[in-house]
Amino acid sequence: MPSPLTTNYDLRSAKPKRVAIVHDWFVGGGAERVVQELHKMYPEAPIYTSYCTDGWRQKLDGKVITSYMQHWPFSKVRKFLPPLRGLWFSRLDLSSYNLVISSSGAEAKFIRPPARTLHISYIHAPTHYYWSRYNDYLEHPGFGKLDPLARLGLKILVGPMRRWDYKAAQRPDFLIANSAYIKDQIKKYYNRDAVVIHPPVDIERFRGESSEPRRGFVTAGRQTPYKRIDLAVKACSKLNLPLVVLGNGPDHGKLKRLAGKSITFLRGKSDEEVAHYFKSSLAFIFPGVDDFGIVAVEALAAGTPVIAYKDGGALDYVRPGQTGLFFEPQTTEALSQALEKFNSQSFNHASIAKAAEAFDAKHFRSTMQDFIKRCLAQKTSLRSGSLL
Image 1 (cartoon, rainbow, N blue to C red):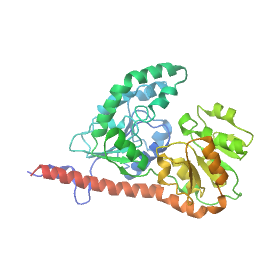
Image 2 (spheres, one colour; image 1 turned 60 degrees about the vertical axis):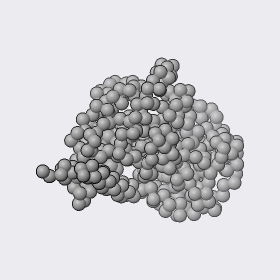
Image 3 (tube, helix red, strand yellow; image 1 turned 120 degrees about the vertical axis):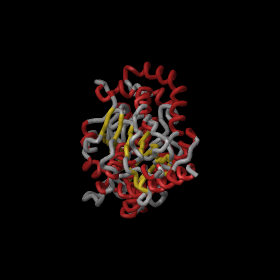
Image 4 (cartoon, rainbow, N blue to C red; image 1 turned 90 degrees about the horizontal axis):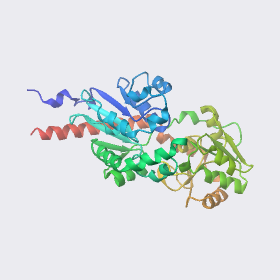
């Protein structure tokens, strides 16, 4: 009778025969870019998710399989019901796959592949609304008029959902963290070890110098409270330094009210326009605590130093005096002092752009492929030992 191992893996090449990819949802952001690169690695693999925009379905060549929530008319209703997402993911039939890669900052890791299947989970963060940002979500649920109901639901469900989330995080064979910061968070909340593989960054879009001289500062990202863009706005207003704020979000009106005359707000800019502002600025201000912070690495790819709060994913790529500088504590005063000390002449733009290449998509795919091969070999070795 042949070993069941040979029916699951090609041991000579350490390649799985059938692969599936699972992701929380497809709307936009860095997490989706990880799946986009996984799709390039495994173009025939189906991609299971709770819901997906038409644009992302097209980017993923129609390989997306969605839940019943896809057809619900209101996106906020889908967002409001994590238990239903968790239930759908936990009931997915993945028995025909040899390798399943879940990309998860929420419920995608709730899947239950059979024991013979290798399950690798790329953790973007332990689920924010149960763990590190629970209080932030209570204060700013993001549901508008439904905020009181959202707060009540979160308070009622957080206990059982934390337990479910913790148990789900114990099931994958291997965990990947997107930064050293998230590796620590995984250990803190899930009591598991993880390997750090940084998410892919579109370096090519930011290559080349701007035809305009560098002046002023820039910041970008979704304008929500935890991003702390208010610190950049207040510090630059106080010092009368020019600052371009790119993006939009629920805090947009509040930020405009805080802004002085030196602040410019720009919404709806194209990728090319964003690259232009990054390449023509003296520095990028990154005042929040981010799981990784792809936008800050994009600034580095443009040769622009990053002035960051000393915490979170920024610790993986900001090198004081080389690719930027840190400020702490997370206050307007501390950021103002960093801006006053900042000397653009002390930074080499070409060297900064070169440092960002370590985060490009090609490097991500290569690192993932090597890691998956090692995991397959280890899984096979463990199963082989169990047969003795």
